[in-house]
Length: 291
Image (cartoon, rainbow, N blue to C red; front, side, top):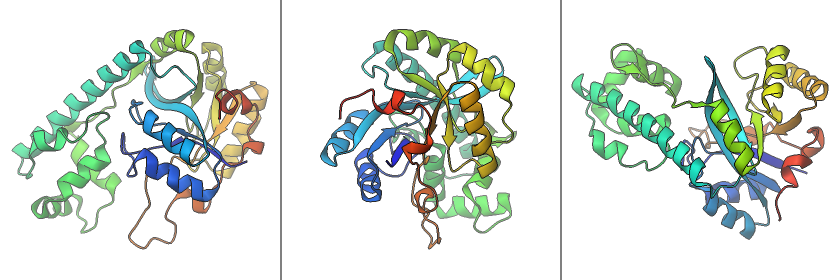
């Protein structure tokens, strides 16, 4: 059975509304899915309604930026109570911190010659402030495009190049995610339930088994095994770790957008599919809610 437990929408840094995301995955034959926007659950109701219309089972989901001491992690959270006032407060605080950090950098860019209406840009985003969309806003001005081309020494700079030059630069500032202490999340999970999964653990390199053992002891339930961010070798090793540590194994496309610009591959589903039969103990997540 095809599933997708990591999808993003316009409520964070995706480019499709929750309804459009559901329409897309429905055509692919996905039967169970989760919207896991960054540090926000504002798109959940729309996603659930659309899933019901297209006969897809919706799993409540969220992707969080968390800190374990000095280590920064992404975790996925499924099947929690999304009406929890305490969770909503944590997410609002996180969004407020991020908004302030983005604003500070935009103000510095404006002071350094970029044509930016800071309030107009910031006010477009009521939840998570997505840097990819902010860059789109900046690049909509031809003068800014010329300035960025000069700063990156490229007529057609990639998004990651622009992020480095504008948002990770001593001249304008360094944008850090608004991380949440993982122990705060673990404590809240005892109240509102759900499963906590380490997100794309091999995205940035080799996975250390002793670290996976550590998060197991902390109370995380599993690891994301099937991800377009993982090499085949990483997937094989993560399968082994999931078995050895008795983890739930999950999978998701991390879908955000269609690539556009006549690219031969438009999204990860063209070369990568998530079949539930390859994911050990996945029923602990996908059987938790009613269809």
